[in-house]
Image (cartoon, rainbow, N blue to C red; front, side):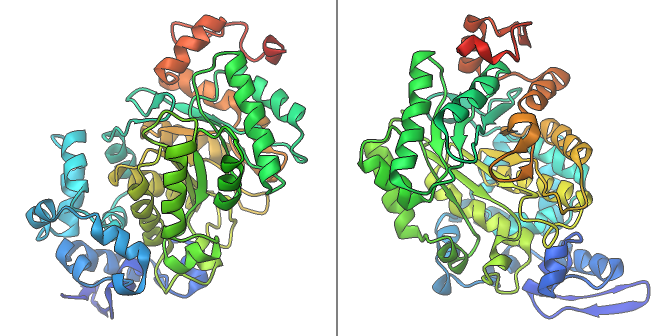
Amino acid sequence: MNLTTTVLGQTYQLKSMKEVLAKANEEKSGDQLAGIAAEDAKERMAAKLILSDLTLADIRNNPLLPPEKDEVSRVIENAINEKIYGEIRNWSVAELREYVLRQDTGNDQIRRISKGLTSEMVAACTKLMSNLDLVQAAAKVEVVTHCNISIGQRGVLSGRAQPNHPTDNIQGIKASLFEALSYGIGDAVIGINPVIDSADSVKSILLATKEVMEKWSIPTQNCVLAHIKTQMKAIRQGAPADMVFQSLAGTEDGNRAFGIDVALLDEADELIAREGTGTGPNLWYFETGQGSELSAEAHYGIDQVTLEARCYGLARKYKPFIVNTVVGFIGPEYLYDSKQVIRAGLEDHFMGKMQQIPMGVDVCYTNHMKADQNDMDNLAVLLAAAGVNYIIGAPMADDCMLNYQSTSYHDIATLRETMRLRPAPEFERWLNRMGLMDNGRLTPLAGDPTLFM
């Protein structure tokens, strides 16, 4: 394995696969904080050149975190289709990139080779791609999943209705939810982040959202984004949960910081299949985001893009209905400005789709980050072009409970209209019956929540 190259007369000798992957990454403040980033653009280019010539077998044979030491690595390793891996093991990372971008490589071909790729191979490919490459390649991939309805079809842009409330007030949640529905948002999920992480609070929110769904015959699914243990307790008490939710990290220790491990996820998987109200077969909602492992001091010197790819390798085990990266939520310590947030959003979406994940993105930023709403509009348009399965809708793009900026209900409606995209088919038929949509366009009734009051 050759880790040496010469750029403009200067020779670079890198020490390990971990160093190559870290220094080949686009500039990220999180990698700089961890002390693993390239010193300058010249060293970054040298690392990319070295990485481009490495083979997929080189990556697999030099694990960043050995399976015997980390259960996320074991999950990723155990999922590999050895026959397909054997066909591509001698490809260089550059050849993988070229294959993915080739005009005659479509969804079926990418779906097949994905079974022979590790998460680290997908991350390596990502580091050699431009933003436009990431849009083009991801747009080829269609990942359709079904909970109570199906989403992810080509030409469909779904939206999560996120009607959070700073005190978990049920009437406040419903008021925001009615606005979301009036704009045609909520086909991905009606998903609430609770303030109170208790089984009683989770149960009351699930009951309230299910009541709205049943009263208005809304074809969608509900979820409360409490800790998985709290949700499990609520479900055992009879709460009507269509899906279960959990945040994921890309290392075993990172997940322990979240209070989870694979055994707990397995237990929750069995519970939601047995006692959940979703028809399935896809009954999970996962969230991720670059930088969480560094926050937990559980990154092992691995760069944040590669760790993010490993999150999707873990999520794949549970055949989720939806996954999204909360791309700018952690803050400037990990993604300093809008340029880094936009890059990360496109990276995460591509890496998820390459691992057959039904990928969404919370197009978001925090108020102490060097970014603004125009930057989020730009990223949302790029993701819509890339075929993102869904994005998040919060009232006026401002989450009053989590105190961060995302995209609004009407932003998603505008993206659909501008990019000629539609809601999920079953949800669109419901919107037509309600008089909120006609022939793929919102009617004058849209945006009026009093329709549901």
